[in-house]
Length: 302
Ligand SMILES: Nc1ncnc2c1ncn2[C@@H]1O[C@H](COP(=O)(O)OP(=O)(O)OP(=O)(O)O)[C@@H](O)[C@H]1O
Image (cartoon, rainbow, N blue to C red):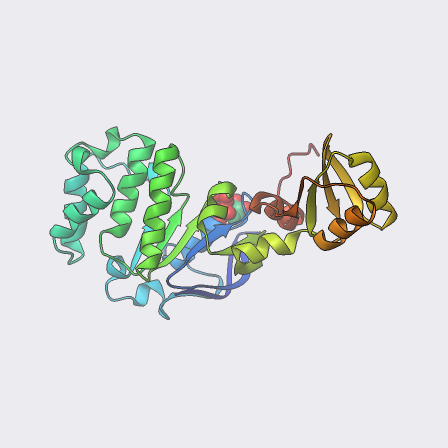
Protein backbone atom coordinates (compact mmCIF):
# COMPACT_ATOMS: atom_id res chain seq x y z
CA UNK A 1 0.00 0.00 0.00
CA UNK A 2 1.23 3.46 -0.95
CA UNK A 3 -0.34 6.26 1.03
CA UNK A 4 -0.07 10.02 0.65
CA UNK A 5 -1.50 12.15 3.44
CA UNK A 6 -1.71 15.92 3.08
CA UNK A 7 1.35 15.72 0.82
CA UNK A 8 2.69 19.06 -0.46
CA UNK A 9 5.83 20.17 -2.27
CA UNK A 10 6.66 23.78 -2.98
CA UNK A 11 9.60 24.78 -5.22
CA UNK A 12 10.19 28.50 -4.68
CA UNK A 13 6.89 30.09 -5.64
CA UNK A 14 5.59 27.03 -7.49
CA UNK A 15 3.39 24.52 -5.65
CA UNK A 16 4.04 21.24 -7.50
CA UNK A 17 2.01 19.04 -5.12
CA UNK A 18 -0.79 20.53 -3.08
CA UNK A 19 -2.27 18.77 -0.02
CA UNK A 20 -2.56 15.44 -1.81
CA UNK A 21 -4.10 12.42 -0.07
CA UNK A 22 -4.67 9.07 -1.77
CA UNK A 23 -4.13 5.32 -1.34
CA UNK A 24 -2.74 2.84 -3.83
CA UNK A 25 -3.95 -0.65 -2.93
CA UNK A 26 -2.17 -4.01 -3.30
CA UNK A 27 -3.37 -6.59 -5.82
CA UNK A 28 -4.50 -3.97 -8.33
CA UNK A 29 -3.02 -1.89 -11.12
CA UNK A 30 -3.53 1.80 -10.37
CA UNK A 31 -3.09 4.34 -13.16
CA UNK A 32 -1.60 7.70 -12.17
CA UNK A 33 -2.92 10.40 -14.48
CA UNK A 34 -2.73 14.14 -14.83
CA UNK A 35 -2.02 16.75 -17.49
CA UNK A 36 1.61 17.77 -18.10
CA UNK A 37 3.02 19.50 -15.05
CA UNK A 38 0.27 18.16 -12.77
CA UNK A 39 2.81 16.85 -10.27
CA UNK A 40 2.95 13.11 -11.01
CA UNK A 41 6.74 12.80 -11.18
CA UNK A 42 7.15 14.99 -8.09
CA UNK A 43 4.70 12.78 -6.18
CA UNK A 44 6.58 9.64 -7.21
CA UNK A 45 9.88 11.24 -6.20
CA UNK A 46 8.39 12.12 -2.78
CA UNK A 47 7.22 8.51 -2.27
CA UNK A 48 10.69 7.29 -3.24
CA UNK A 49 12.44 9.64 -0.83
CA UNK A 50 14.23 11.43 -3.71
CA UNK A 51 12.76 14.73 -2.55
CA UNK A 52 11.48 15.90 0.84
CA UNK A 53 7.87 16.99 1.20
CA UNK A 54 7.25 20.57 2.28
CA UNK A 55 4.47 19.12 4.43
CA UNK A 56 2.50 15.91 4.79
CA UNK A 57 3.73 12.35 4.39
CA UNK A 58 4.17 9.67 1.77
CA UNK A 59 4.54 6.10 2.99
CA UNK A 60 4.96 2.59 1.64
CA UNK A 61 3.36 -0.05 3.84
CA UNK A 62 3.09 2.52 6.59
CA UNK A 63 6.70 3.66 6.57
CA UNK A 64 8.55 6.50 4.87
CA UNK A 65 11.07 5.39 2.26
CA UNK A 66 14.00 6.32 4.50
CA UNK A 67 12.59 4.12 7.28
CA UNK A 68 12.52 0.98 5.11
CA UNK A 69 15.12 -1.62 6.12
CA UNK A 70 15.79 -2.86 2.58
CA UNK A 71 14.33 -0.24 0.22
CA UNK A 72 15.16 -2.08 -3.04
CA UNK A 73 13.56 -5.24 -1.70
CA UNK A 74 10.40 -3.39 -0.73
CA UNK A 75 9.92 -0.78 -3.48
CA UNK A 76 10.88 -1.01 -7.16
CA UNK A 77 10.84 2.11 -9.33
CA UNK A 78 11.08 2.98 -12.98
CA UNK A 79 11.67 6.68 -13.43
CA UNK A 80 13.26 8.36 -16.45
CA UNK A 81 14.88 5.42 -18.30
CA UNK A 82 16.98 7.70 -20.49
CA UNK A 83 18.79 9.03 -17.43
CA UNK A 84 20.01 5.51 -16.49
CA UNK A 85 22.50 4.52 -19.18
CA UNK A 86 25.36 2.65 -17.56
CA UNK A 87 28.39 1.92 -19.71
CA UNK A 88 28.37 -1.57 -18.21
CA UNK A 89 26.43 -4.55 -19.47
CA UNK A 90 22.90 -5.11 -18.20
CA UNK A 91 24.03 -8.21 -16.30
CA UNK A 92 26.99 -6.56 -14.56
CA UNK A 93 24.94 -3.45 -13.67
CA UNK A 94 22.27 -5.65 -12.06
CA UNK A 95 24.91 -7.75 -10.30
CA UNK A 96 26.45 -4.65 -8.72
CA UNK A 97 23.03 -3.47 -7.58
CA UNK A 98 22.26 -6.93 -6.21
CA UNK A 99 25.55 -7.17 -4.34
CA UNK A 100 25.14 -3.78 -2.69
CA UNK A 101 21.58 -4.53 -1.60
CA UNK A 102 21.95 -8.06 -0.25
CA UNK A 103 20.03 -9.54 -3.18
CA UNK A 104 21.11 -13.04 -4.36
CA UNK A 105 22.76 -13.19 -7.84
CA UNK A 106 20.22 -15.70 -9.09
CA UNK A 107 17.68 -12.83 -9.08
CA UNK A 108 19.74 -11.15 -11.82
CA UNK A 109 19.11 -14.02 -14.24
CA UNK A 110 15.51 -14.28 -13.11
CA UNK A 111 14.72 -10.64 -13.91
CA UNK A 112 16.70 -10.73 -17.17
CA UNK A 113 14.53 -13.71 -18.15
CA UNK A 114 11.31 -12.13 -16.95
CA UNK A 115 11.95 -8.98 -19.00
CA UNK A 116 13.09 -10.83 -22.13
CA UNK A 117 16.66 -9.48 -21.97
CA UNK A 118 18.60 -12.80 -21.82
CA UNK A 119 19.98 -12.40 -25.34
CA UNK A 120 21.33 -8.89 -24.74
CA UNK A 121 22.32 -9.31 -21.08
CA UNK A 122 26.02 -8.89 -21.89
CA UNK A 123 25.61 -5.86 -24.15
CA UNK A 124 26.31 -2.42 -22.80
CA UNK A 125 23.14 -0.70 -21.63
CA UNK A 126 24.01 2.56 -23.38
CA UNK A 127 23.65 0.78 -26.74
CA UNK A 128 20.05 -0.24 -25.94
CA UNK A 129 17.07 1.05 -27.92
CA UNK A 130 14.38 2.92 -25.96
CA UNK A 131 12.27 -0.26 -25.85
CA UNK A 132 15.17 -2.32 -24.50
CA UNK A 133 15.97 0.45 -22.00
CA UNK A 134 12.38 0.24 -20.76
CA UNK A 135 12.76 -3.51 -20.27
CA UNK A 136 16.07 -2.92 -18.50
CA UNK A 137 14.40 -0.31 -16.25
CA UNK A 138 11.72 -2.85 -15.39
CA UNK A 139 14.37 -5.51 -14.71
CA UNK A 140 16.05 -3.09 -12.30
CA UNK A 141 12.72 -2.30 -10.60
CA UNK A 142 11.97 -6.01 -10.17
CA UNK A 143 15.45 -7.00 -8.96
CA UNK A 144 14.68 -6.94 -5.25
CA UNK A 145 11.36 -8.79 -5.79
CA UNK A 146 9.59 -5.78 -4.22
CA UNK A 147 5.98 -5.79 -3.10
CA UNK A 148 5.45 -2.23 -4.34
CA UNK A 149 6.18 -0.85 -7.82
CA UNK A 150 6.13 2.77 -9.02
CA UNK A 151 6.50 2.97 -12.78
CA UNK A 152 6.67 6.33 -14.55
CA UNK A 153 5.65 5.96 -18.22
CA UNK A 154 6.71 2.30 -18.61
CA UNK A 155 5.03 2.14 -22.04
CA UNK A 156 7.04 4.97 -23.61
CA UNK A 157 8.95 3.92 -26.69
CA UNK A 158 7.44 0.45 -26.88
CA UNK A 159 5.89 -1.01 -30.01
CA UNK A 160 2.54 -2.83 -29.96
CA UNK A 161 4.14 -6.13 -28.93
CA UNK A 162 6.12 -4.40 -26.18
CA UNK A 163 3.02 -2.62 -24.85
CA UNK A 164 1.12 -5.89 -24.80
CA UNK A 165 3.99 -7.52 -22.96
CA UNK A 166 4.18 -4.77 -20.29
CA UNK A 167 0.41 -4.91 -19.79
CA UNK A 168 0.61 -8.66 -19.17
CA UNK A 169 3.57 -8.21 -16.85
CA UNK A 170 1.72 -5.56 -14.81
CA UNK A 171 -1.34 -7.79 -14.54
CA UNK A 172 0.79 -10.72 -13.34
CA UNK A 173 2.54 -8.52 -10.78
CA UNK A 174 -0.80 -7.26 -9.45
CA UNK A 175 -2.22 -10.79 -9.39
CA UNK A 176 0.76 -11.78 -7.26
CA UNK A 177 -0.62 -9.30 -4.70
CA UNK A 178 1.79 -6.46 -5.39
CA UNK A 179 0.94 -2.76 -5.31
CA UNK A 180 1.42 -1.35 -8.82
CA UNK A 181 1.27 2.40 -9.57
CA UNK A 182 1.75 3.33 -13.23
CA UNK A 183 1.76 6.74 -14.86
CA UNK A 184 1.10 6.97 -18.58
CA UNK A 185 -0.05 9.41 -21.21
CA UNK A 186 -1.48 6.58 -23.32
CA UNK A 187 -5.15 6.75 -22.29
CA UNK A 188 -6.27 3.78 -24.37
CA UNK A 189 -3.64 1.62 -22.67
CA UNK A 190 -4.50 2.88 -19.19
CA UNK A 191 -8.19 2.27 -19.85
CA UNK A 192 -7.45 -1.32 -20.82
CA UNK A 193 -5.02 -1.94 -17.97
CA UNK A 194 -5.74 0.02 -14.80
CA UNK A 195 -8.28 -1.20 -12.25
CA UNK A 196 -8.20 2.09 -10.37
CA UNK A 197 -7.04 5.63 -11.06
CA UNK A 198 -5.46 8.39 -9.08
CA UNK A 199 -5.99 11.57 -11.11
CA UNK A 200 -4.34 14.87 -10.22
CA UNK A 201 -4.36 18.36 -11.70
CA UNK A 202 -2.20 21.31 -10.64
CA UNK A 203 -0.89 19.19 -7.79
CA UNK A 204 -4.34 18.51 -6.35
CA UNK A 205 -6.35 15.32 -6.18
CA UNK A 206 -9.13 15.12 -8.77
CA UNK A 207 -10.12 11.46 -8.35
CA UNK A 208 -9.08 8.31 -6.49
CA UNK A 209 -11.54 5.77 -7.84
CA UNK A 210 -12.21 2.74 -10.04
CA UNK A 211 -11.43 3.29 -13.72
CA UNK A 212 -14.97 2.40 -14.85
CA UNK A 213 -16.53 4.70 -12.28
CA UNK A 214 -14.30 7.59 -13.38
CA UNK A 215 -15.35 7.12 -17.02
CA UNK A 216 -19.06 6.65 -16.26
CA UNK A 217 -19.14 9.57 -13.85
CA UNK A 218 -17.79 11.97 -16.45
CA UNK A 219 -20.52 11.75 -18.98
CA UNK A 220 -24.25 11.57 -19.54
CA UNK A 221 -25.72 8.24 -20.49
CA UNK A 222 -25.67 7.92 -24.30
CA UNK A 223 -27.83 5.59 -26.38
CA UNK A 224 -26.75 4.48 -29.84
CA UNK A 225 -29.59 3.64 -32.25
CA UNK A 226 -29.33 2.23 -35.74
CA UNK A 227 -32.46 2.67 -37.87
CA UNK A 228 -33.46 3.08 -41.53
CA UNK A 229 -35.94 5.76 -40.31
CA UNK A 230 -33.44 8.20 -38.83
CA UNK A 231 -35.34 11.38 -39.78
CA UNK A 232 -38.67 10.20 -38.39
CA UNK A 233 -37.12 8.76 -35.23
CA UNK A 234 -35.18 11.98 -34.63
CA UNK A 235 -38.45 13.93 -34.65
CA UNK A 236 -40.09 11.48 -32.25
CA UNK A 237 -37.15 11.44 -29.84
CA UNK A 238 -36.75 15.22 -29.83
CA UNK A 239 -40.47 15.65 -29.10
CA UNK A 240 -39.98 13.36 -26.10
CA UNK A 241 -37.17 15.58 -24.79
CA UNK A 242 -34.19 13.69 -26.20
CA UNK A 243 -31.09 15.31 -27.61
CA UNK A 244 -30.18 13.61 -30.90
CA UNK A 245 -26.88 13.63 -32.74
CA UNK A 246 -26.74 12.13 -36.27
CA UNK A 247 -23.59 10.02 -36.53
CA UNK A 248 -24.22 8.66 -40.02
CA UNK A 249 -27.29 8.30 -42.32
CA UNK A 250 -28.74 5.55 -40.15
CA UNK A 251 -27.01 5.96 -36.76
CA UNK A 252 -28.22 8.32 -34.02
CA UNK A 253 -26.67 9.00 -30.60
CA UNK A 254 -29.25 10.08 -28.04
CA UNK A 255 -28.83 11.73 -24.64
CA UNK A 256 -31.45 12.66 -22.00
CA UNK A 257 -33.49 9.50 -22.77
CA UNK A 258 -32.86 5.97 -21.49
CA UNK A 259 -32.31 3.03 -23.81
CA UNK A 260 -35.70 1.57 -22.81
CA UNK A 261 -37.45 4.88 -23.57
CA UNK A 262 -35.86 5.07 -27.02
CA UNK A 263 -36.96 1.47 -27.76
CA UNK A 264 -40.54 2.13 -26.57
CA UNK A 265 -40.87 5.35 -28.58
CA UNK A 266 -39.63 3.59 -31.72
CA UNK A 267 -42.11 0.73 -31.20
CA UNK A 268 -45.04 3.09 -30.51
CA UNK A 269 -44.34 4.85 -33.81
CA UNK A 270 -43.74 1.64 -35.80
CA UNK A 271 -40.17 2.65 -36.62
CA UNK A 272 -37.97 -0.41 -36.96
CA UNK A 273 -34.58 -0.51 -35.28
CA UNK A 274 -31.51 -2.41 -36.47
CA UNK A 275 -29.53 -1.77 -33.31
CA UNK A 276 -30.02 -0.27 -29.84
CA UNK A 277 -27.48 -0.04 -27.04
CA UNK A 278 -25.78 2.14 -24.46
CA UNK A 279 -22.66 3.82 -25.75
CA UNK A 280 -19.91 3.85 -23.18
CA UNK A 281 -17.45 6.71 -23.08
CA UNK A 282 -13.68 6.47 -23.21
CA UNK A 283 -11.13 7.29 -20.56
CA UNK A 284 -9.69 9.93 -22.87
CA UNK A 285 -13.03 11.77 -23.09
CA UNK A 286 -13.54 11.52 -19.33
CA UNK A 287 -9.99 12.69 -18.64
CA UNK A 288 -10.32 15.70 -20.97
CA UNK A 289 -13.63 16.67 -19.44
CA UNK A 290 -12.63 16.27 -15.80
CA UNK A 291 -9.10 17.67 -16.00
CA UNK A 292 -9.96 20.40 -18.52
CA UNK A 293 -10.08 23.10 -15.88
CA UNK A 294 -6.79 22.03 -14.34
CA UNK A 295 -4.59 22.10 -17.44
CA UNK A 296 -1.69 24.41 -16.80
CA UNK A 297 -0.94 25.37 -20.39
CA UNK A 298 -3.72 24.76 -22.88
CA UNK A 299 -1.84 25.73 -26.02
CA UNK A 300 -3.62 29.07 -26.45
CA UNK A 301 -1.42 32.08 -27.17
CA UNK A 302 -1.63 34.67 -24.40
N1 LIG B 1 13.02 20.67 -9.12
C1 LIG B 1 12.04 21.51 -9.46
N2 LIG B 1 12.17 22.84 -9.33
C2 LIG B 1 11.20 23.70 -9.66
N3 LIG B 1 10.00 23.33 -10.16
C3 LIG B 1 9.79 22.02 -10.32
C4 LIG B 1 10.78 21.03 -10.00
N4 LIG B 1 10.27 19.81 -10.28
C5 LIG B 1 9.01 20.03 -10.77
N5 LIG B 1 8.73 21.34 -10.79
C6 LIG B 1 7.46 21.96 -11.22
O1 LIG B 1 6.42 21.29 -10.53
C7 LIG B 1 5.31 21.07 -11.37
C8 LIG B 1 4.99 19.59 -11.43
O2 LIG B 1 5.98 18.91 -12.19
P1 LIG B 1 6.01 17.33 -12.41
O3 LIG B 1 7.21 17.03 -13.25
O4 LIG B 1 5.89 16.65 -11.11
O5 LIG B 1 4.69 17.11 -13.24
P2 LIG B 1 4.23 15.82 -14.08
O6 LIG B 1 2.79 15.64 -13.77
O7 LIG B 1 5.14 14.68 -13.82
O8 LIG B 1 4.40 16.35 -15.57
P3 LIG B 1 4.67 15.54 -16.95
O9 LIG B 1 3.41 14.81 -17.25
O10 LIG B 1 4.90 16.66 -17.90
O11 LIG B 1 5.86 14.67 -16.72
C9 LIG B 1 5.66 21.67 -12.72
O12 LIG B 1 5.12 22.96 -12.79
C10 LIG B 1 7.16 21.72 -12.69
O13 LIG B 1 7.64 22.77 -13.50
